[in-house]
Amino acid sequence: MKKTLRAAILSILSWTLAGCASTGNGAIKTLTQEGAAHAIVIGKSTRADINESFGSASVTKFSNGYELWLYQLGYSKMVDSLPYVNLVLSSAENKRELSILFDQAGVVKKYQLVDQQP
Image 1 (cartoon, rainbow, N blue to C red):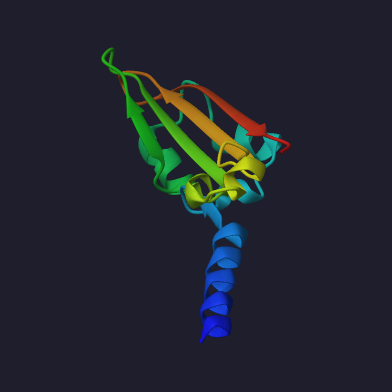
Image 2: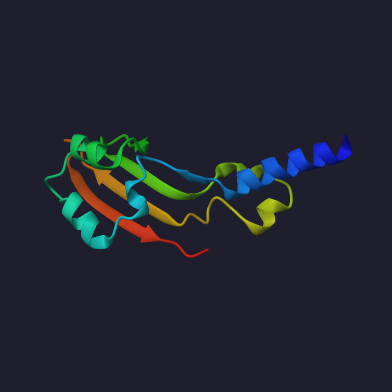
């Protein structure tokens, strides 16, 4: 019984650590700087264009009407809640992040694609 319980716990733990969390439709996984420049045109691309290209994002709305859309590909947030494991891995060590700032009219003002090395 103890061996079965241990195996189950190890299985869940390894699944949790191996899992990749992402926002959007996964398009940023293979997105290059050139691809981003083609897909996101400052002053022209709209929220609808970005949603069509990249899917749903984590959205932050500011009081001045601007919005920041964030797409991340990296470790699962569950890693942060695991004792001892969170000392080695952190969800802050995302592999890739695309942030897009929209103005009050819903048009892209700025964007940034960043690859982070853990």
